[in-house]
Image 1 (cartoon, rainbow, N blue to C red):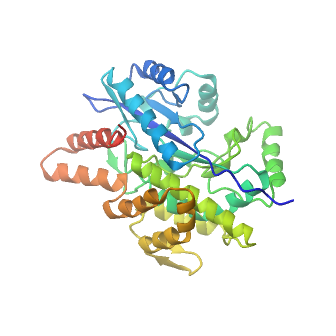
Image 2 (image 1 turned 60 degrees about the horizontal axis):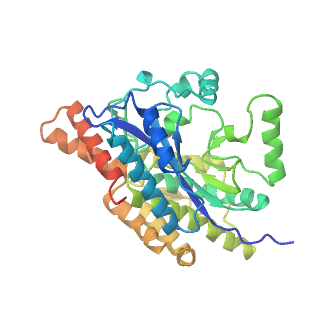
Length: 379
């Protein structure tokens, strides 16, 4: 019996940081009240995260990128409106330019108490935000097969989403510093490769039965089969500062998966490469975003990222048309043209230094930039 075509539904989760509009530092008070107000207005699509100044939103299960656009714009605008009532604002960036993790407290929930007890400082340092894209792949075996293949493209998705060039008041020299923090946790990074869903379940069961993890939700790979939904969940990306960039990356994620499914139907597949080689491209994306190219593993050499992106857009053109997300795929070229959020944050910082600002003043201007860009185009 063959595998039926996946639904290719989509859901997007984003995490934001709440900042004080006056000091530009992370919010201290009122975070809980804001989350409660947002939850009431968004029917449970908003919730807390590990640290109090963090807030998470999640779209409904969407049948198209257009539907996801509408829902996510509503969520961003609602969070901004609720925060404004307390003199605060959300920023969609994976790190804050100057806030310190040691000054933050975690949300009063048992799951967060348990996480910090187990992980200690590795968890308390998680002053980072990410973006997760769920794509509906209902068949268990197909989810595992596509996870093995999609892993190749995780560095490409990361490279175009970078938004964490600063950490605790310093330029890190990395475009995605977030993953250096997250990778301190166990069960992170490039996912393992499995021959079947049963093999995946056996490995998870070993950890559960040994008392290491409660369930598969404690596996935090860059890409994983969701435990809660019949989806493949891509987790490698930084949170995108602008809504249009979020949708472009979600569309690319969706189109690649549909392309891989089409190959499978023709008894073809994307070549599987070793995690060692995938990790090398992942590091290049963390360090440079797309600036220094990426290894084309079929050719065995570094290729300019623009060439890889054009090839990818061409490979998925049929899928972009079928999924009605051609405008979002075109937005990918715009990201390369004007830079990721990380590039633009660094540009604001350097321009303000050149204008005579102190590093502290320049970092506050970066926060102002992020506040404005987070809500651009959401109303």
